Length: 115
Ligand SMILES: [Zn+2]
Image (tube, rainbow, N blue to C red; front, side, top):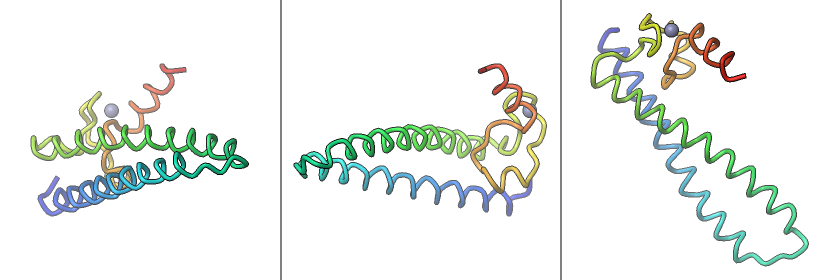
């Protein structure tokens, strides 16, 4: 992969990381507001919302790990290769998900094994 493309993906990854960090930080503020809000009628709604936030949060954390992993791969010069079969991941896939670890085939294989 050429340097120009690598720089582009590095930028995309860094930006995504920053936006998740912002989101996670602002979420903490939201939670404090829920805690001190004290509106009894909305308790059920709030706990449902909190559960949803928790789920979103864990997906975000997962993506954060994958982003760090992808940034490390850029440093090592192995960015863009599948971690399972070591084939090159098509650029269209990287454009959509720059932090993706596997090619489509290996990803599908891994998901099949999970079921
Ligand atoms: Zn693969």
